[in-house]
Amino acid sequence: MSQVISIHPPPWIADQTRCLLAKRGHAWLLSGPSGLGQYELALSLVRAWLCDCPSVDGACGACKSCHAIDVRTHADLFVLLPETEMLALSWPLNEKAQDEIDSKKRKPSKEIRVEAMRDALEFSQRTSSRGRGKVVLIFPAERMNVFTANALLKTLEEPPGDVKFVLASDAAHLLLPTIRSRCLGHNMLWPDSCSATSWLQDQGLSNAQAQTMLQASGGRVHGALHFAEISSVWGQLPNAVQRGDVRVFKDWGLPQTVDALHKICHDQLALLSGATPRFFAATDMQKMGSWESLTLWSKSLAKIMRSIEHPYNIGLMQEALVCQAQIALNSKP
Image 1 (cartoon, rainbow, N blue to C red):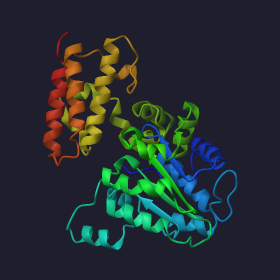
Image 2 (cartoon, one colour):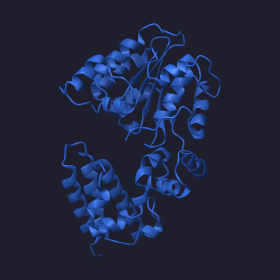
Image 3 (cartoon, one colour):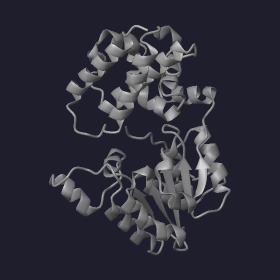
Image 4 (cartoon, helix red, strand yellow):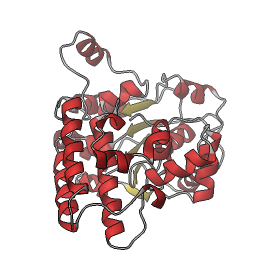
């Protein structure tokens, strides 16, 4: 799913921005579980570093530099994302890549391509256009393949004097150790429940939706906002899956479907062990399945996630997944 973009970041992102701006460094690695706002924090730092009138709190939001970032035309900012994310977030591709995709010579890449990294490194050698230095933003950094990451290493070690790098990652452990060692690290902070609920309500969710989606996302507030469109059916999923009702996943993608099934499986295992469900309300759950059936189901879902990018027929795959889940949930101890 695409990331949430906000000119006025949530308070916990603003607090982290203020903290990081008080520190010095040419390369930062922002890391933590998905849904905590890595991209938002990275962009907030970028805006402050390039702003014409920055304060200790960050960018002013009103100058020409801030406007140029808003309209995706800042000459001193290079955004390095997979092409699928670039398109989703309205960042322009270079002319060659756009032509190849428009002419259907290839599909948008889900990795950060080495050609794009070479463009970023060439950009880092140029003179700053506005006199406030240059910035390269890389997200999700774990989408760099080994060739792309190796191309970055030398510049991270010996950067040009006026360039900064900010890498944001949902899975920093997948990065090369040599990449991690060349960056100052920052672990993303989790917002408290009250602040998260209040912010979600400001985004248009009701209090009940906010509470439900925060639980569904495991407390990851940006993930909760992405889940909001399915808030009306979330609590129905466990029983629907037990009945084998695949219609509940109509219009869902496979990653979203497998994620929901994983969470049902997790909470069923929690119930069997006497613990409280994490992703669903206790009133939405009843003990189903056995230790053996649920454990085998969990392992199977983990295996499927490793090949989730394969071009499966979504409808047929969902039917197979729900059939497998129904068997696991209806197995007797």
